[in-house]
Amino acid sequence: MRSIWNGAISFGLVSIPIKLVNATENHSISFRQIHTEDGGRIRYRKVCELEDREVSQAEIGKGYEDADGSIVPITDEDLSALPIPTARTIEIVAFVPEDRIDPLQLSSAYYLAASGAPAAKPYTLLREALKRSNRVAIAKYALRGRERLGMLRVVDDAIAMHGLLWPDEVRAPEGVAPDTDVTVRDQELDLADALMDTLGEIDLSELHDEYREAVEEVIAAKSAGEAPPETPRPAASGKVLDLMAALENSVRAARESRGEAGGEEEAEVRELPRRKRAAPAAKRTAAEPAGTGTGASTRTTKSAKAAKTEKPAKATKKATAAEPGGRASGKANTTKKTSAAKTSTAKTSAAKTSVKKSPAKKAPAKKAASGRRSA
Image (cartoon, rainbow, N blue to C red; front, top):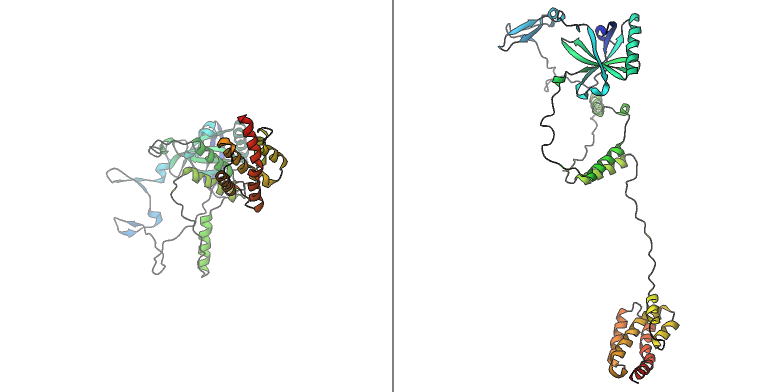
């Protein structure tokens, strides 16, 4: 890698000759300005406004524009003679924990390479001292016409330097946060935590610039005289009206993208046991007097049809007992038969026969009971 700056690290009384090389590179695609009618290049010419002619790069220098508009020329010799110790030196001024550095201050990144064999020993000494202390070095250095702030840390077996912005160059976040009072519920925080857990972690080396790759495909297709590939556009997202619903949908989509279950369990259908209708009737029959014909008939009858016809028979008994003298009214019998026919679920001929026979057999017993009560 080509060095962009040569100097030394000043570590107390120890001086470490180093070379500064870029630790990052820019992969963005650059475009040229062209004339759309004929494809000609658009170029900028550097023209002296006093002489109204184009000048070469060798004729161009630096100048500072004063408040009144006048220009003060500044030469490279003026800058190199500045009375600062960091003109060609990275001067370490302190060692601090890494978490003391605000990420907003991070700027360009460089590698510091040992310059020559004599620099190997002090270079290794500084590297191992940084490793063992778990701290970073704060340094000052001059580059491209200005003094800068830097942070030295260990990367593998090398020392890297991150350019830092000066504290007064970082703007305070005034007027950025919402100025309205917002209450976040615990349920929303729980869903946000679930979404973060579902997304999980990722290996940063797997990330790549998809936009640059798409631009390269367009350039390659047009160079070959082919139509550029069409990229499907994502569906436009609507206005979020329900934050809880948006979080739930986000968690579900994240799980589906990772091949996990949708989170909704299938309902299990179980057949409920059938109700036993004969059991309540048997209990009510057992509570009646021993001489009642209805109780005897119910105990001897075990079929499902007899159990269904028992209710209308009991209703007929109650209506008969309510009449004076214990007489069975034909009108009441007819009414009970009609009620039994409506409420019975099995409208078969056997059920109708059972309903007709029931009052005839029970009438003597009812009259005998009525006679005993009058005696």
